[in-house]
Length: 138
Image (cartoon, rainbow, N blue to C red; front, side, top):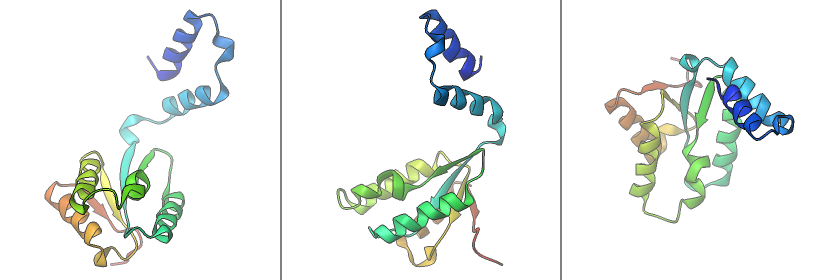
């Protein structure tokens, strides 16, 4: 049963199918259009260092590289606002937790000079996560 069919069934059970919002219908339509085997979860790595400009940069990068079927993950956007709230190692633990859920890690910005990005890449290597360098030419 698709998500759309499930939603319609549940709403019909309450006799209010005509009140399903357009956004919920569209979400269900998108779900049925995207074949789950084609969905890729992509971790966007970029230096942060609690710099708001880096947050803006990664947001623009995600917008530029986003394609249907992609689920972008950005630790900067997920919990960068808590940068000074806990020890560095705990923040990196959050990052590796996310990395365990992704298909690929994409490296952006001056990642070579970022301790966090280098750590994420090393973790990806050790755990067999595909590493992509979209902006680099080899």
